[in-house]
Length: 234
Image 1: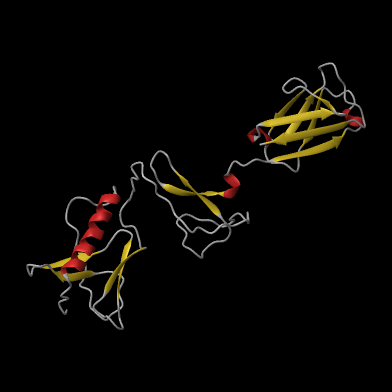
Image 2: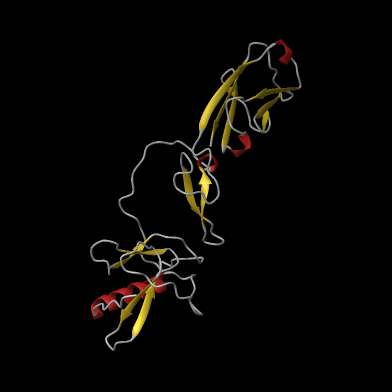
């Protein structure tokens, strides 16, 4: 390999990038030896390897990237130039401690679609799925994980109404299955009305799964033609 006689300033900058990476990432390898990668051959395409540099005393040293960083060697023009860049495969568990400082991303695209992913998988790569998932943080471990949009608690509301029939006359318990709503126990509020009059929760009716049960032993009777309306909000 041809020795790359880089300037002292470039060497200092490159070492500074590596040191900064070591300070910011608190869970990557911090002790022990790191295996030296193969030398980068100038003029060939490579995204990994060791770059040989010479310090101001003539000592040959090597710089290399790992754990989420990538280096790219030029193949045409400036073939002795190797560039370090963000992006790559994490080889170690990595945590960034912002220590009270701001860590943010600018320039993120704003979307208005709400198409949820129906084929999200563990560890999927870009281009292998459809729709959207949410990134969430596991407070116990600090891990970043994905959550299906269907599992997010969002504000949901709706109503359904039923018309009592002759078989409901005088029945002790009258049940109405809600066909257009999710499972009701997850909802924060449920209201049931008989002909516009509000019934008392857990006294005049109870809710289980997606079924409302009227307990007509409490001084009222359901007659054929009565309108039973259920409203809910999450």
